[in-house]
Image (cartoon, rainbow, N blue to C red; front, side):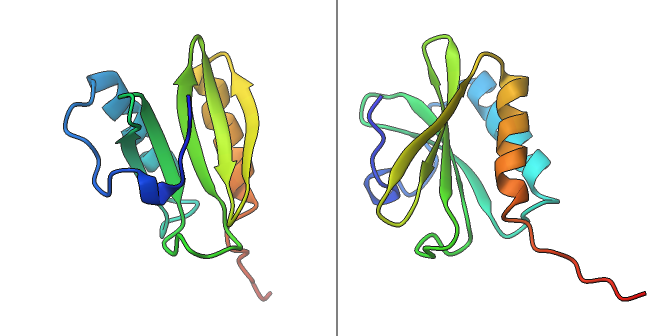
Amino acid sequence: MPIHPIEARPSQPTQSTTPVESQRCQQLATMLAPLIPAWSVELHRDEFGEAAIVIMPDDAGDAIYPTLIVHADGAVFQLDELGEDTFHKLNEHLTWTELLRAVRIRLAWETPVSTTVH
């Protein structure tokens, strides 16, 4: 499935989503909200009608933070990363639960560190 830069995707989530796609997008958004509250989780479709969940920081042009793209590729779930000028296929997962764990681990590095003084 070709993945194009965010600029080539629709700016609004599409209306013709299946309940499963919407539930997965909502599940990711709910899981990530406490970790990275300023990021957005959106469901988009490419030009072939294939769904992708895009996880991006509040400043999509920020070169420090990557944009993650989650999509189904046959019987597996694919996790990809889009940087300023780079695209990487991070890994494939056989189950949705494995993919959720991988996204959480990847974004744990983006979570702001709390400084607690004792």
